[in-house]
Length: 219
Ligand code: G3P
Image (tube, rainbow, N blue to C red; front, side):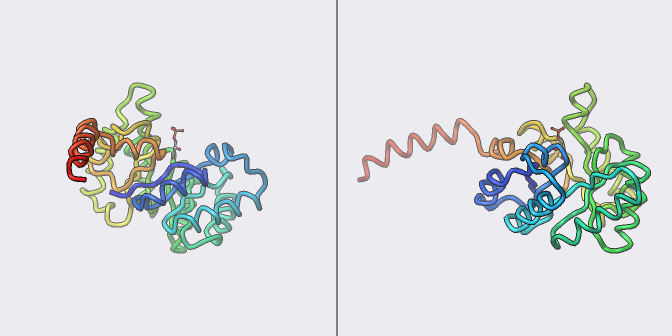
């Protein structure tokens, strides 16, 4: 399974990269806005800095909602760095844009996916990733992980998994990561805290404390 950090915060990215287990980063306009970045040049410079830190796929989302705007913005984003993956929303314009980028070998991440139908159309259009939003479905009492499982199984049935990766997004906590792992998501994108939660176990802490106590006898 690949672990992506879902953030535009450079400090969190540096911390995650130091662990040696982070494979990429996803951003979106809300995450970028949280960093206080203003203006097209500053935004593009920030994406370049993220790519320098990560050296893996970095999803950069277009702000346009129309087809012409998406393909113009996406081309400029893709030109920033070889690791940029152009992120577009799962709309009619977005699906058209994904096909446009696929025809030009530009990687894409189709985001704001909440149904199997959306994921299949994005894969058919040539998306490199589809991003089902697990947490936001759970927030309205739907089954986010169940959607991930359904997408994974359907992609295997029709062979979409050969070219399109299921990237579980809107991860709220560590259990989401485990659940998405168990249903076969290719990638989870998550805040670092939820990924670090995978490390936590009271028996590890208890066992290490005992080893430390006993090691005193060896000194
Ligand atoms: O990558 C999508 C993710 O950032 C959305 O997460 O917590 O806003 O649902 P959230």
